[in-house]
Image (cartoon, rainbow, N blue to C red; front, side, top):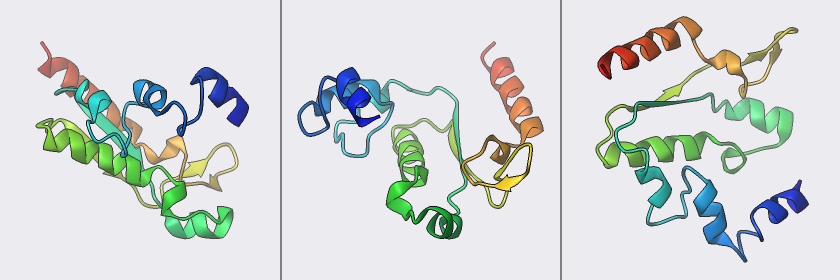
Length: 128
């Protein structure tokens, strides 16, 4: 996978960091936050379930290995830029993978489908 990433990005973060910034919607280390500014006032939701206990036990991962910090940082930056339509949705004990209901906090099941559909319809109606 590393080889493929280096090929697609024409280098590594050490040798071609701007290429990584160009393709990423958000990067904490990009002090100009050029990419995230493109979101403007677009309604955006990011869902995360940062069950650090699960990650520590099951994967030996800590907060630096999961996307929760980046998710919250991106929403925070958008809010700081004036996008009050960008929201972080943090869930707890919702992540279970189908069909066997195996616990995994990085699962689509963390989204409340009915609530998400209502929100999407509201966004469509608000844009008219």
